[in-house]
Image 1 (cartoon, rainbow, N blue to C red):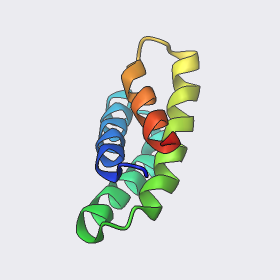
Image 2 (image 1 turned 90 degrees about the horizontal axis):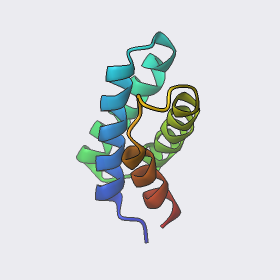
Image 3 (image 1 turned 45 degrees about the horizontal axis):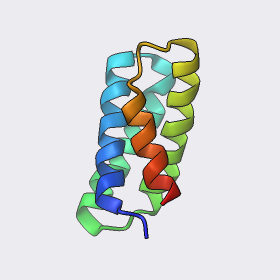
Length: 85
């Protein structure tokens, strides 16, 4: 079973990274992820959180490939670990 609270925390960390990256191309994904985090906090339904958490993981992996020092590997690992479990 996936630990939704740990996945939520990993998604919060991902939104922080998107804020630091500060690129317009990630604004939509970041805002949707933040909305899903708030929604999950309210109703504990993780469906949107997983959908946008996976999208955030792919976006962060792609960004890290181009900018290896700007994304902490732990954030990617936490997202991957919690999606896979």
